[in-house]
Structure formats: structure tokens, C-alpha cells
Image (cartoon, rainbow, N blue to C red; front, side, top):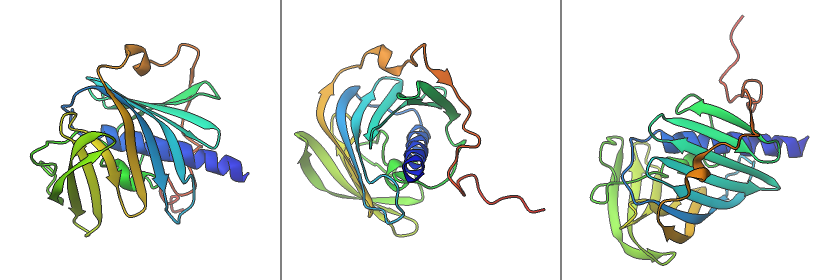
Length: 219
């Protein structure tokens, strides 16, 4: 039962991650592929570490994550604001619109940082946050601008934005961090953003973690 709950939390957090990433305006960046490592120290439980890959194309983004034997891919279409979550073991997928699901889960705190940035002003068009440039640093062999971001509640996050890709190579919050490595520039294969023909579409209703869909209705 605990293993099933961990799997469900992993699925839900990945869905939330992809939705938050897709909730940004159409980004402007150079396409690339990279390895990805996610580490969580949240006391709330759930998956603590995940590894995978990220594929960023001209109009799509794909994140592959693996945790405790579960492999999940998230394909985001920036034009339609659609997120498809693919579960490899089950050969099934979920389709959601950005912002359709709300809730909390591992990765929720940092995932809002995972999108393209204006290199001159990462806080542009985001009135609830302020940015402070710390300096220029090398992360995973890439030249990055290090920015400290403070939200209206005083929570501080840090991002290291690749000066060429305009995408964060590293992002940290008080309880989560993500790191990209082995960055390879260039448009990924179009097949990376397609759902395999043998995958079956499923409904997310009835699968959400307790409390994720909000409080029960009053009688």
C-alpha cells in the first residue's frame, strides 16, 4: 500500500510540475537536450530523488523522470497549453490543460522556476516577485547568470540561467533542487513529443491523493 501511495504521489507531483512549467507565456529559448536530477528534502514525504532527461524544442518540452522503478514522461505543448503525462509501465497517459489541476506535491515549490527567462530581467511581467543578480557562474560547464528570487511571502529561491539558452541549468528552493547536466544544443527529434500509438488515454478522476482536489462538499 505504501508503495502504491508513493507511486501516486510521484505521478501527481510530476503532473503538477509539468502544468506549472507550461503555465508560462510562450518562451523564447534555444532548443536543447540535457540530463536532469531532482532532489527533494521536503518533510512532507513522497519521492525524495528522481533522475531523467529534459528535451526542449521550439514549441514543446518533454521531461522524463524515474523514481523507485516508476518511469514517467511529461510532454508540454506551449501553443495549446496541454500537458500529457505518459506512464511507461502501464502504457497509459493523462491529458490535462495547464492550470486544470491544483494542489501540493513534491517539486511544487521549485517547478515554477522551470521555464525560459528574459536574461535582462527574470522578474519581467511577474509583479509578485523581485530579482537580485548575484553574479555570473559556471554550472555544468555552462555560463550562467545567478539570480536570487524573492516572492511576496519572503521565500527565497535561486536560479542559474544559461546565458545562451535562457533556461535555468540549476534551480533551488529551501526544500528542492534541480540540476541539468550534459547539455546538448539543437532541436530534439520530433518523435520525443509524440504519444506512442499503443498508449491508452485514461481519466485522472478518482486517482488524486487525499485532499488534492480540495475539501469535500458540505451536506
